[in-house]
Length: 293
Ligand SMILES: *[C@@H]1O[C@H](CO)[C@@H](O)[C@H](O)[C@H]1NC(C)=O
Image 1 (cartoon, helix red, strand yellow):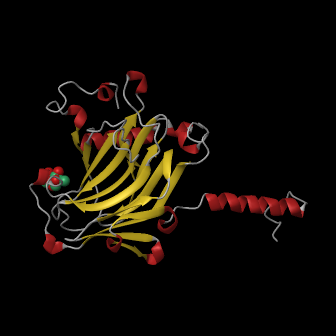
Image 2: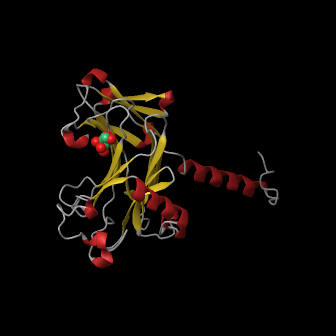
Image 3: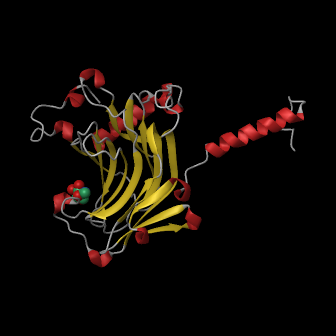
C-alpha cells in the first residue's frame, strides 16, 4: 500500500480509506463509453465500433441510415462528443447530435444538425430549441473549418440560466431562460442524448435543390470522446435543483468576456439564418428575440 501520497497521515487505515474514496470518485467520474452508456436505436448493422470501441462509425447507404442514444436521461448538465463529419460530397445527408425529452406533445429538444454540402462547399450547422412542445427556432451558421478533416468537439451546456451550444471553445448559440418574460424554458423534463445519420435530400442542402449522390455511398461519420455529465433520471430527486452542481456554477451563468467576443464573431461572420430576423415567418418578433441574446 502506498501511504506516501498522503504524507500527513500517520494512520494507514485512514490512508487506505482515502484511496478507496478517491477511487470510487474517479470511477463514478469516468468518461462515458459507447458500450456502457449508449444503445443502438436504429440499424445495428450500420453502426460500427472501431479503435477498440473508442470511436463509433456511422454508416449511411441506400438501405439505411442509423442512430444511437444514451441509456440514461439527464436533467441539466453538459453533454458533448467529438465528431468527424462525412468528407467530400455530403450533399443531402444530415448528421445530428441532440437531446430530446422523447415526449410527443410537450417535447423539449436541443439540436445540432450538420447539413452536408457538395464538395468544397461549406457544411451548415443548424441548431434548434424546443421548449414545452414549441420549436421553430432555427439558426444556421456556416463552419469556419472543414469538419470532415478532423474531430471537433460539439457541446450542449444546459443549466437553469441558459442553454449554450459550443463548437470547440466557441459558443454558436445561447438560449436564455426568459421565463420571467413568459418564454418557455426546458427545465421539467429529462432528456436523452442522441446521434443519427440519415438522408434528407428533400430539404437539407440548398433547400433540397442538391440531391444526394449515391455513387459516393457509403457515407461515414465518426464520433468519439463522449461526455455525459448531469443529473441522471431516475436518480437523486434533489440533484436537478441543486445549484451546487458544477454546471450551474458562476462560470456558467453567462458567457465570460472571451466567450462573448467569440459569440459576436460567429454571429457577425458565420450566421446565415436566424429565425429571429425572419419577418416572413415571424411578422411579430418572438419574445425571446426581443429579450436579447
Ligand atoms: C452549401 O453551399 C452553398 C454555396 O456555398 C451555401 O449557399 C449553402 O448555405 C451551403 N449549405 C447548405 C446546407 O446548403
